[in-house]
Length: 157
Image 1 (cartoon, rainbow, N blue to C red):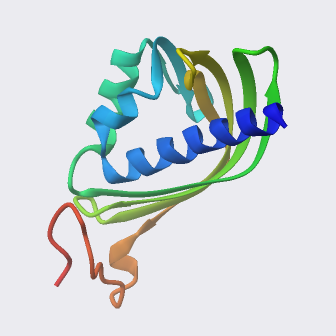
Image 2: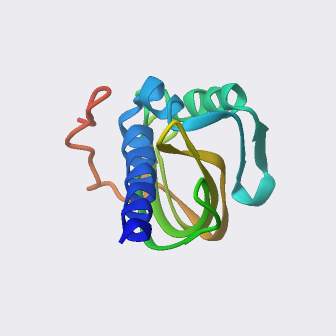
């Protein structure tokens, strides 16, 4: 039963990561990473050492009001490797709408994470994904496509 509680806590950590990412809650997201965390997004194309570097990348690339994201993690495979460490593999489906450049990006990936328990709370030791596919579409190619809601900025007329 204790293992199930720990696994559920790790799931909630990942869900919070995605929520904070999509809502641009950078301070809250920062707290989910240990100071010496590492990341490797896009199969290593965007690799960073340390929480500060990871957060700078995320804020710089996704923090603009013209960047709208939706990340959905599914089918977690979580293994507790000790009382304070674990690993996880997650299927990801994501959509990124870039209103500044008029594009929509869709993709799928598999995240590979390492977790560590610090002061009773699970945190990311490392995170990253490798794409199974990624596609991009010009929003101008579909004249009827309009953005009707944008929490962070204006909508399309």
